[in-house]
Image (tube, rainbow, N blue to C red; front, top):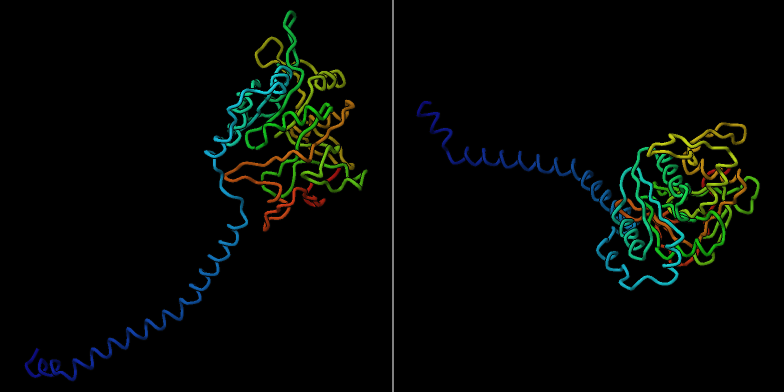
Length: 325
C-alpha cells in the first residue's frame, strides 16, 4: 500500500467514520433481531404458563416412603385371622406390580393373608390357571380357600376394603376404578334396560349397585361361582395331567350385543359367564380405587380434572361410564 493510501486510511476522521458504521450496523441487527424474536419469547412464556396450569391439575407424585411408613405394626385383628383362613389374594398382571401396590400386598401378607402373584402375557390363561388351582382339590386334600380376591399390578386400594367386600354378603363384588387413561371408569352399567342407573355416586353416599361387568383390579369372588360356571357351560379341564391344567373360566370369546359381535377380554368374559350362570355382579361405590402410573389417577381426576373435590360423594355422569349394552 502506498504511503498516500496509508495516510488516507489512518486519518482520525476516517477511523471515526468506520467505527460509526460498524456500531450502526450492529444496532440495526440487534433491533431487528429483537423485534423478530420477541413474539417467540412471548409464545414461550405463554406456553410455560399453560404448562404450569396443566401441571397444577395433575395429582401429586407418589410418595412411597410415606406410604410404607403407614403400614401398621399392630398384630392382625381377629377379623383378619378369620378372613385369611377363607380368602386367598390372587394378583394377575402382564407387566409388573407397581411398588405402590406391592406395599399393599405386603400389608395383606403381614395380616396373614396368602398372596399369590402370577405374571403372564395371556391374562385369560393366567387367571383361569390360578382359579383352577384354588377350586380343584385332589382326593384326600383338606378344604382350601372358599373366597378369592383378584387384584392387578396397578390398582391401588385400602387394605381394609378386603373386609368390606366380604361383609357385602354377595358372591361377586368389586370396586370402581378409573380407566388407565383417566377418561372414565371401569364399570358397565345396565343403562339400556334401567335408565335410572345411568349414573352412580362414589364415596360416603354410595353403596352396592348391580353392574353388567367390572374390572379385576379389586374383585371379590366366591369359589362356588367357578364351580357353577363350569357346570353351566360344561367347561373342560384343559391340559390334564400337566402343571398348566386349567378350566377356561376367563377365556375370551365373542358375544352378540345389539345385533353386533363384541369381543370380550378376560374380565368381561368372566362377568358374562357368571351372569349367564345366574350370578349378579356388584360394585361397592364406597370403596376407593385408584390407578397407579407415575402418579395416582383418582376418582376426582376423572370427574373434574381442574378441581380437587373435597366433598366425600361424587356423582358420576353417564358419559364417564363405559358404553351400555
